[in-house]
Length: 230
Image (tube, rainbow, N blue to C red; front, side, top):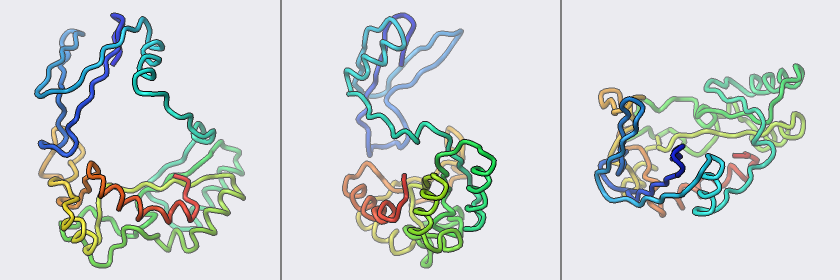
């Protein structure tokens, strides 16, 4: 947080894995242009004298460390969508960008890249045939070959989006046994959460658990080996 009154503030909340889920230690209200902060449980607050927003950024980096510079392509244009239809559709889209000389450095695909079925309607048991860590063969019949070709022929990288939940029955049984699930569902797109529209009940992963993070990262490794950029 930066204030033109000449200071910046950083709040640190140590509530990972605590209940109630999604609640913060601090809250604020705005009335007639005045921000009023309040807190409901302990947290750390760092105040940093700073005459300008630029100076406040420097003070923040002094406190937490400077971030690594992103690779050059990350500053370019990314085309992201939900609705990639097939391998032919992907390659036609990439060709149109290059033939039209539109700037593009990467494409991002929503979760249809690994499944041909939406899991929004799944109950807490999931589906036995659902694959959480594979590829949708309609889009990716030859993943390694495709990633390499898109990079070489179009100079376009591929990023893949996924949700922080599972849909396969056996994997859900595993993470339930390990205690790696959040006791909650995905909110219905609003805040406060609309419980009547929530989905993925008892299927959302608790990434505050280091063992879960280690297991989940292992499931993802083969994508990087195949040529997925991010």
